Amino acid sequence: MSITIAERTAVCLTPTVTSPVTAVRSTPLSLGPLAAVTGADEYAPLSDGATVRYANFDYAASAPALVEVQHAVQEALAEYASVHRGAGHLSQRSTSRYERAREVVAEFVGARADDHVIFTGNTTDSINLLAGCVPGEVVVLDCEHHANLLPWKRIGARVISAPLSIEGTLEVLEKELSARPAALVSVTGASNVTGEVLPIRRLAALAHRHGARIAVDGAQLVPHRRISLRESGVDYLAFSGHKLYAPFGSGVLVGRADWFDEAEPVRCGGGASYEVIGTPVSKSVEVAWHTGPARHEAGSPNVLGAVAIAAACEAIERLGEDAIARHERFLTDLLLRSLEGVDEVRTLKIWADSTERVGIVAFTVDGRTPREVAEFLSSEHGIGVRDGKFCAHPVVHRLGCYDGAVRASIGLGTSENDVRRLARALEDLSARAK
Image 1 (cartoon, rainbow, N blue to C red):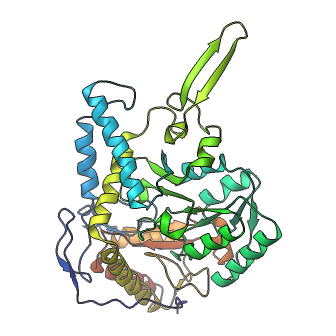
Image 2 (image 1 turned 180 degrees about the vertical axis):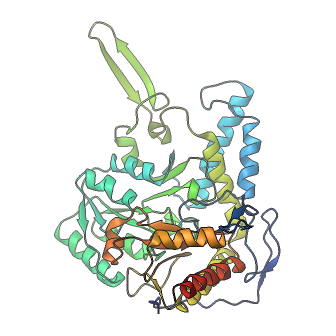
Image 3 (image 1 turned 60 degrees about the vertical axis):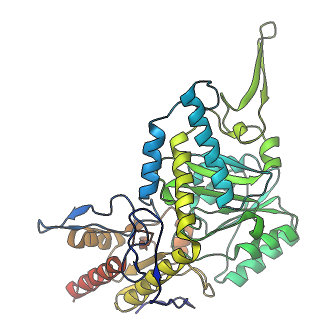
C-alpha cells in the first residue's frame, strides 16, 4: 500500500493541445510528450543483451535540452565572440544576444523594472552569491535542498524546523519573525524530493509583514510553473538552466537591485570592476566596482548558457502554462495511482496538508534498497530514475528514509507510455520478490 497525497487535481483527457514548439505532435495529452527534447530516441542496453528506448525519469536532476535550445546554441556558436569589450562585428552580435537573454529572462519571471538579472553558474551559485549580499540575519527551513541550506548556515542563518503541515510551517515562521526580525527568509518553491509546492504568495506576504524580504529557490518550480516576481511579491528568485531544458552551464539570480549594488562583489575580476587604479608609491590598488548585473558577473560570461536559458524561456512561453500544467498533472496523477497499486511501494510526502506538487514523486520499495530498485529499472527495463538522498539529507531522514529513496520525475518529454512502462517495471520487481 502507499501513502496518498491529500488532494489531486482532476484532468480532462479529451483536449488536444497543438504546440508551436518544433517537432511536437498534436496529440491528446494522455498519449505523447508535450515537446521535443534531445535524446528522446536514445536506446539503452538490457541485461539480456536486448535494447529498448530509454525512458527518462530523471528530469529533476538535469533535464535534456529542448530542440529549440539546441538550435539556438548552434546558431549563436557561429557568431560567438567575447562580449561587452569588443568593437568587432561578432563581439557586438554576441553582446546583443547576451543582453537580449537578460531581457527575455526578466520578462519570463515577471521581474520588476528595477530588478537585476544576474547570470550565474547554477542555483547553488546564485544562492551563494545572494548570501554574500544580505545585510542582516536570514531565516531558513530545515527541509531545504542543500543549495538553500548550507550557504545560509555558513553565514549563521537561523534554521528552524518545519512542522508536518504547511499551515504549521507558516505559523512557526510567523512566530520566529515576530520574536526576532530578520532581513531575509529563504525557501524552496517546490521540494526536489517530493515535488510539493509551498504557498509562495502567502510566504512572501508573511515575510513582508515582519519587514523581511523573501528569496525562493526556484530550481524545481520554474521548469514546471510560471512565477511572477511582481505578482507574487517574491524579492529574489534563483534557478538553473540545466533543470529548465538548457543544460549549458548557466543559472540565474533575479531580484531587487539595492542589495546587489551595495554589496562587495562575491567574485572579483575583470568586468565587475569599473576602474582599477594602481598607486606605485603606496603599492596599493584602488577599485571602483560597477553597479548593475556586471558587478556580480566577473570574468568572461557564459554567453551560450545565457542564450540557452533565454531560448528555453521562449519555448516554454509558447507552449503555454495551462498546457504544461495539464500534461504534467495527468502524468503525475497516473504515476501516483500506478504506484499505489503496488503493495511494496510507498510514496513520500513532507506536509500532510499539501495539495499541489510538480511532476516529482519519491518512493521506497519494501525489502529493496533504493540503489537496487534503480539498477533493476535500468538493467531490466531501460528506465532511468534517481536514487539516494537528493542533496536534501535532513528532509529525507525526517521521512524515515535513512538509506535514501527512489525519485521519478516528469518533464515535457515524458509520455503516458513512459509512465505505464515504469509502473509495469515496478510490478515486475514486486512479482520477482514473491
